[in-house]
Length: 414
Image (tube, rainbow, N blue to C red; front, side, top):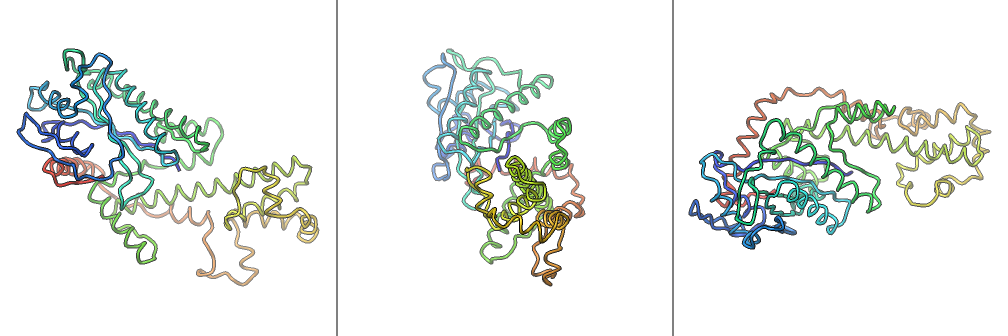
């Protein structure tokens, strides 16, 4: 499922960071910082799929030389606590091609150039070999000053100001969502991303009468794991996969994130089942079938999802014919009656266990939990008290420490 992520961070001297080190690490190159007299060499870094630099039309030619570009950035800042660069971190949809991911990243970078007149250095990274293989992402590093024919000039205060910075970033979040959604549409994907907050999305769902989506969005934002917890959870997942057992989180934050993802997955499955039922029932009614026959058809279509039968671009009625066969529907109606049809429909949606009870197979080991039971297990699970403020402060400390490690050449990789 496509997901949205855009975060904006600053490269600050006060945190022991430099634009030259940040650029070298993200693009996997060797850059000598003339201000510090240090060499940042990340040429052994792997997983970098593409890099490129975009600048305003009247920028000097030396701006295409990455080492010269970021050394000029450092030279243009004289304060010891200067913010030398700004990073836009983007999640790229795994559902589209590598060419499309490259194009939408380039389009976003060009929008930054046109809007703020800055220099932009882009690195597109592949998923980490031990992590989620859908995690394609890009690091977009920009100067904090405008790049003009004579070099770097005025600061981009519109992004620095407390009054205008948030508005500008929110608008750029909308630009990034629009670029992704157009790419997903071109690829024939039905999923879309949304840059708005969960609360805003929930209010919009309630306004259009979509109670199920509103319930799904009635949750806290997913917690940030942080580098240390993320590494521990990746190792735990890999070990569980090797041992052929279910993954169990090993950190408090990992447990909360895992529970939230389980809840979203259960909601998605419930929605898929309801969509199957509505689609099939409507198609059967349009074809002249009675309510009971249409309900039984919807039952079979929903039950077929568990067997992996549902899929295909053909007409709904053709898919239904493949799943059920029309010749036995009327016999089912005569045998079961309308009441039994409704009961079987509830069973298919995970709201009843009737068929397993009748078959004598009502045991914990022989029955797969229904969607409703899975939702209840996740949503009613007690949530640990995490001390969020302390965690946020720890995240900031982790970020500083990890950055210092990267500047030292420790090879930390996203």
